[in-house]
Length: 279
Image 1 (cartoon, one colour):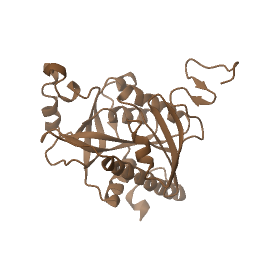
Image 2 (spheres, one colour):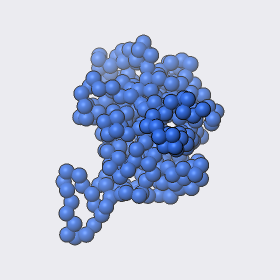
Image 3 (spheres, helix red, strand yellow):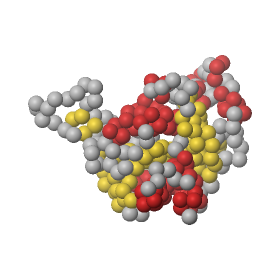
């Protein structure tokens, strides 16, 4: 930062870098994978052909590289929706147009095995941060191209998967119907698990709703592929490096697929993908 550099309080940029993520134009690819945990960035990037660290500031750890010849980046968002919305906003300001959340999740149905993938088509916005962006009735919807790319990627990688609606909460314990310290669980959360199951919701996690809401408002593509590490029906829990890498591989493969589809759309002068376009 230069001593006489004027920094805007409305949109702080320091030395050409966005204030929170510490990245500027050219630091990241058009497509960015978004895990919550900064430690997962290296694990995800380990499946790429090449990778280098761009920034590591607060909860935002960023690496950029290539996968199957396609530029790709990964930025952690920290836990929960507030820090994720900051990441999506600042990354969008420097040229990112596609976001895929790569996370862990709790499955809400007995047939969801540990290690399965959940591909989100939309989300129940049980968080508070997305309500700072828009009214609660605004839908959190995944971009259809990202959903299709993730499904194709899961098929290619050979990962068992589920497709459907995700519920995004602000807290891991009471927000998802788990008792907090001392068994505390408010009455208005006692039936949240059962209610979501009845509504056909596939999984609980903490960021997808905010991601999809922000991306739609900012005019970006977004989706999510979360690995099941907990089953709330059978009360099983397991998380391994291999599970996290598989989720990263599916998401990275989806980025490669989207790049191919984007070229096809450009070649044929189309804005939107449809099945016949690829035939």
